Length: 306
Image (cartoon, rainbow, N blue to C red; front, side):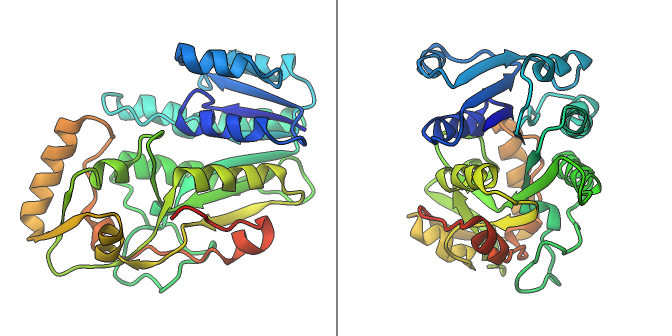
């Protein structure tokens, strides 16, 4: 099997490359990235003959060269994403939305068998009237006023519109709940970074988290499972009140009135400068808990870490 990974020099790109290198069913991994690898990681990858790095920008037409130079790609895992806070919304949209459109179009043109897209469960939206468990066919009601959410919704819908039975590539969308881990930039890593986590007074919604290693394994399962196609919700072991999630992480919780917390988080994320926020407090007020039955049954995925 020959696998192309966009965003290969990012956090999940690196993790997935390492995971697939160890699988005997993967013969070659082509990494596509427009960032420089740190020296240690570059040496580590170059030690494995399975991996080749191609420098290219998914916003540019020239990116098609990676398909022209690497014939018969079986699977494309699309992980490239622009979450840089100082980028204008148009520049981020060119990478996140139009870049996704270009990659899936090139996958079809070059007869790639499977296209995998990493999406968040946040696109369902955190709503007081959400059902107990959101299934994969639930409407996408995330707040489009937030650029990062709008881009994810539009990219996810682009992938859905390219799900054509009997036509390559088979499209797989993995929708992940909030992700924690040391190797990736995650909103939850920032939000839950301190020993004390302020929450909205009067709210304690059901919540789901997943560790980066389980995310990597789910991506690998989507790559390696024959016949995988369609949408899969993916989450960690438990669905429990947010206060209990934080308690298991050794965090203390302090309830704060919403208007004060909104001001605090806007300032905090602006000064932190790691994510394209302001942060939407609805995600710690209302549930957006997903049903993961399909991922367990069809991909054989069971979370192990969280």
